[in-house]
Image 1 (cartoon, one colour):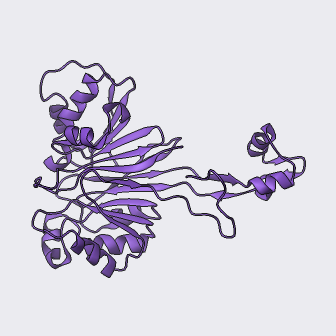
Image 2 (image 1 turned 180 degrees about the horizontal axis):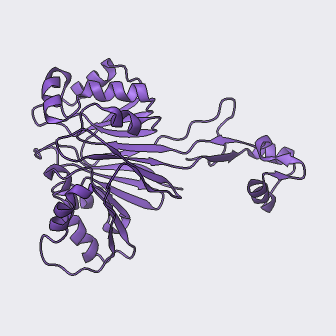
Image 3 (image 1 turned 90 degrees about the vertical axis):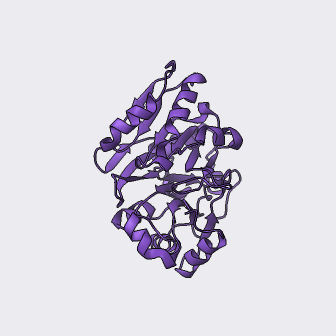
Length: 314
């Protein structure tokens, strides 16, 4: 069975606390492992979470503030120490290329792995796929910042009972999928559309068009909520979101599962973030992130009038 889940390495903004490590998130997506914003201590948090260097295929950095990037040095060296057998691609704002270079070569070590640098120079598609398209969208923060959005291509879900009714079995199913019709039976008669799943990662930003573009129709949205609503002026000044702003954006964008994270050390009660996101109108599934938590990508919605079939996982 395929695995699609978010592994939370850390949830603190600016500085780690006794209970929260610096930022760090790994999206496991079938055979891919995308590390987002590895802050200080991410290598150790990966160990605690059961994520190996071999699991990583891609690194995405939103911007070069320390809580989102200081862990790069350790993670990159661990990838090389463990001799990861496949290339690892790194995306980051091109304007911060000198920071990436410094972190990549912060100390002496032996390079054994192909680390491919693919800096983001402008918003748009970074990876066209398959198995997914990965895009970067500009956000509003005091330094150059991008959010990332992953979209799986749409497809068709075959309906076993309709295939059986038409006597289509075995290799003929593949022929029908490939050709669109078989012995007078069309693909539409024995299948339903299956929308590809969508994931977005939104860090350090004021509320802006980019937030909505990233969040649109997401099955799983990971979004910063550094401040509570009573500190909205601070949020705007320093280029961040409040819990209410994040919840309202998720509600308007039709997000299915909202993950709030990147919390200021000034707050002690995580439940307050959830309460404000709910008060802003978000009614979907909601997680206030904690270190080492695992959050599965929601199962696909079933088409109206069609029951879940056996083995329908994603």
